[in-house]
Amino acid sequence: MEILGRVLENYIDEDDKELSTKELIEKYNDELNEFCAYDKDTKDIFGLVNTSWVFCEVSKELKELKYTIFMAEVENIGYKRTKRGEKPMPNELFRINEKDEILVDDGIMMSALDHIRQIEWGI
Image 1 (cartoon, rainbow, N blue to C red):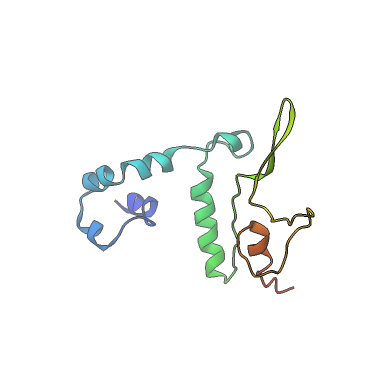
Image 2 (cartoon, rainbow, N blue to C red; image 1 turned 45 degrees about the vertical axis):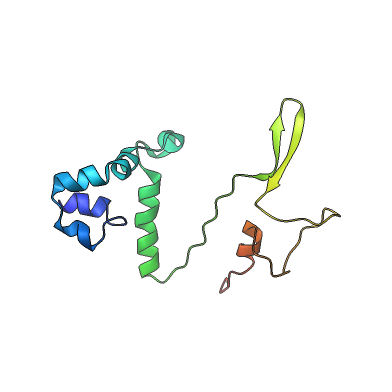
């Protein structure tokens, strides 16, 4: 039960503490399947590991040390490469104006760059 609690610690609420192990497994079946899946992209480098879980554990330790972590995941970077060349796509990395100039410091928080510019780096 201790290991199951540790795996599900980000999901379990107060009511779940009354559930049996079997009931927890049934309730959080999808989350457990996701946890048990390993990252195929990093298999050759790190072996069979769930990188999301590892990242969560490392993040907790860094948080205890008072480190802040900025995370951003973008799917669209302004274009998609095809056999015929580049196809324009939305851009979640940064915004541009009609002159293709990168927009910064205009107070609009839509892109990854907008959020990165808000970080106080403490250098």
